[in-house]
Image 1: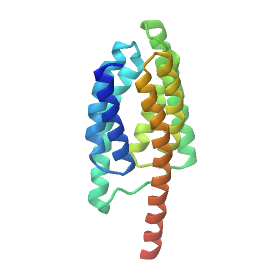
Image 2: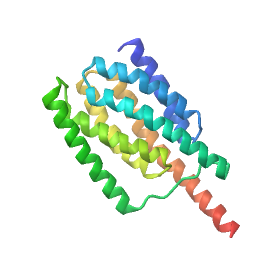
Image 3: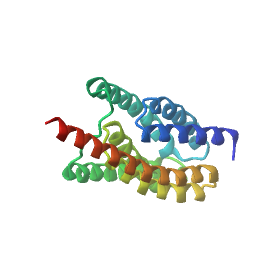
Image 4: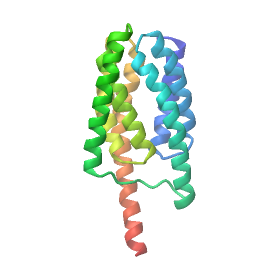
Length: 194
């Protein structure tokens, strides 16, 4: 457990908590966490996670822009629906992308757990995209992804990060519940406005 890991964990917890609250500051804290974890994961030869942090940085700017644009239109961050066909298609694409990425890591690097690392990276990227689009399904996906992350980080002896991801499981479940409440409120407001 290094000072860098401790700082990354604290900043990550703040970022996820602000995301649950639909607070725009989440994007700044999350960006800092991505930078810190990119370095930390590189040191532990989790190259899929390292590269993922760079993708997160790009999607972070997209999410900030999308949330800001939505806030300017609605004066709040509205939760958007996601069709089941789109969920299935995007999850298939994530799995395929993770497989291709994993094969690259396996044969071109000394990655510690290339296939698991790549699949987690692919599905984390999808979950982050869903977060940027304000899809409530993001929280369900994060619960499953974070559970698997806990095991991987224990295996790599990143125990504090494993504990962080265990906390993320609870936060993701709470985020799902919180966003459900907001969605119901938004639906009532839309119904009353008709």
